[in-house]
Image (cartoon, rainbow, N blue to C red; front, side, top):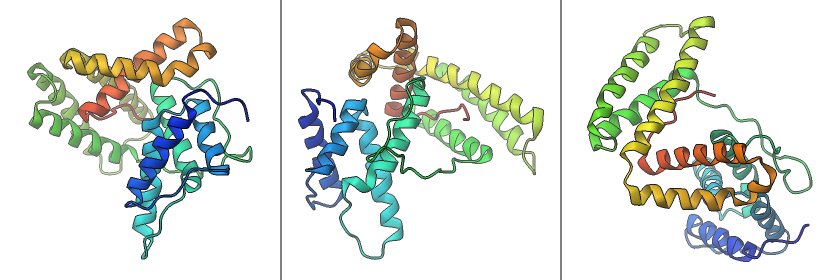
Length: 241
């Protein structure tokens, strides 16, 4: 394995501490092969928040299936961590470097079915309604939410769902809506929160900078800021992929 960055030990300790919390206090040490695995996440640029989300998926899935709760080892979280890492990179536009292989050189992540278009619309509408109710977006966003809600209601009115050109046209409009929502989020964000997000994004993307042109890095940075801001504000991703 390549030499680890200076902070890889701290990265592994934070992963270990988070896994302990998700295991209800059971300490599963990140040592030996497990340390090598998590070190590779650090070297490949997997942000801590992405690794945490992958761990969450594994723990929650096992909790739903198991009648007897047992502590989860970090090795079992590899597929979910890599899934979330893929999703994060697609969301911010960092897709050209290929997916880091899992331990042993092969990906162990099973193919996962995402939500259907109707499910996606339902979730997006629920999040937008919540944002309106809580005042997450500024008042002038009401017209945008009304416009998106009307579009979603029309789409949901098709009993058998949209097909062919109608479906593709809606997906294209979702891309436009998503860009508008990102702009509204930035416009209404507290300056302190926005500065914190920008600082965290710079840290998350630092290991990718040398692999990208200045233009590509700027696009990825903007995409990552938009993505993190919507996560902090609990806003939906409206585009459908």
